[in-house]
Amino acid sequence: MKKLGLIYHEDYLKHDTGAWHPERKERLTAIVEHLKKSDLNDEIEWITPQLKSDVEKWILKVHTPRHFEFVKSSILSGVRLLDFGDTYVSRDSFDVALLAVSGVIEGVDKIFKEDMRKVFFAL
Image 1 (tube, rainbow, N blue to C red):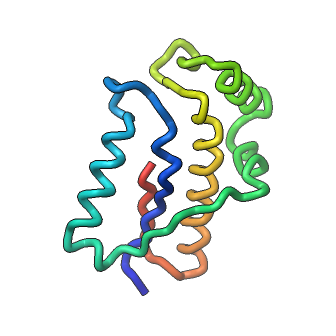
Image 2 (spheres, one colour):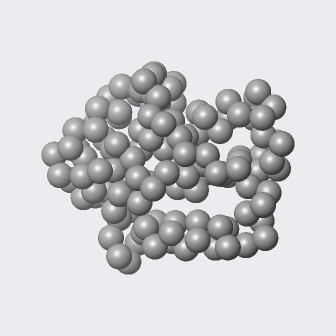
């Protein structure tokens, strides 16, 4: 058994927050490239999550339906900033969020099934 599961999907890079934002895709690309070149790579099982058909059910365990619909409709209508805060989004952000939650579910499942002892989510 590998010591660390690493959840990552190239589609996570589609969440475009802008070139100046700390969550920009270059940050994630740098992390992934560094890990692939490091000695740690031998200890990592790279896991590419698939979209879960019941992902909305899991999201609604921690967010209200109203909030879920607000985020979904805002992003799909082309909004770039949610809630006048620092949550920048792009047209692909909603789909990326669903895929990210699917990755979290997959990682937690691997821990509970004892396939992994630790999981890192590169989002």
